[in-house]
Image 1 (tube, helix red, strand yellow):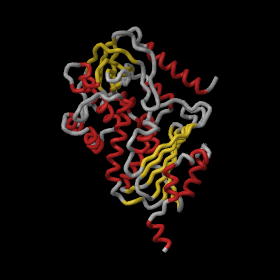
Image 2 (cartoon, rainbow, N blue to C red):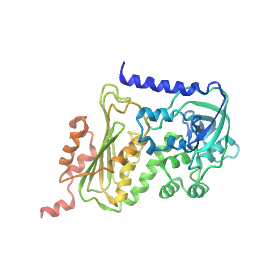
Image 3 (cartoon, helix red, strand yellow):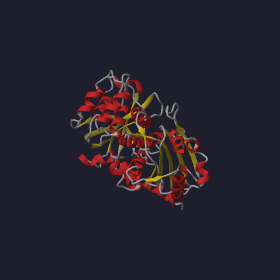
Image 4 (cartoon, helix red, strand yellow):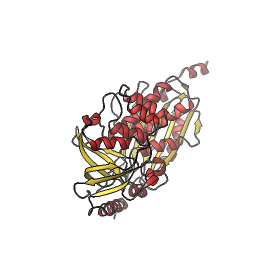
Length: 396
């Protein structure tokens, strides 16, 4: 049997084991990490509610919603861990975000405010549906059920910055997200606040997969406003790194900001089948006007690069190649891209006298043939042809 099929059968057995523990009971009790999930099917009438791990209590639940903990695990371990999160769903309209008439939604919003796990009990109308949910954007989640009621058994621990900004109904969501980030509030916390309808002037529930990308995009644009005023990086600089079979080569070139991402999915990775799939997208100094063809990964990778440029107070043209290898046998969510870029940019870089030398070095670590991915590089071709003012001065 194909090794990937064997691994997906393992996922199925995890789901069966989790679901079988609750099929004889109509209630569960556990510490939500905290976590909420807002679906997208049926939009604008959708399902939303808390996620509760019945087998975990207290601060141990924190690891279920913390990327830094996931980085210490293998892919199977992450899926097994996250499969313990039971989705307690109730039907809501996206416009109900600021309504006082839905007590289950109000309790979900209260839970989403918390920084630490919250003991929660939920009752269901029928046995929990025995399945896992995961894809390229969402982090794996466990079984689901329609909730008739749930109660929060303790007071949520709400950071002061969150408490203050959530009740500011005059502030735009993008400005609140910026201030929350400067207040050291995590991406995951901000995402659930946006998703459950607690940010902005006009409050709406936002499907979780959309809110993940929206937070990455808004945070990236916020960094970009400052980076455009920085001086250019001094050298052609190349970083590389890999987590969970996602290998990144990240090249910074001394130019005004622009950004390009090449994705190369090797055979026998999730979704790629037996063929190599290569895609690309890019933006210039004025930013991106339409949604990326590479979906959420484009914005997650860009955010990591912009965080680095802001940290060193420089701007540059950024060229990335993300090569997805067979080790990445199940999708874990777009957080993998964000964290892989962050980890790669902590490694020691190499510096070069020309873009050609940097690309030659980059190609020695990539399994995708150079000719296959370089032809997709639209922005990079411009960088290789354009001369800078420095080059004119140096030739005098």
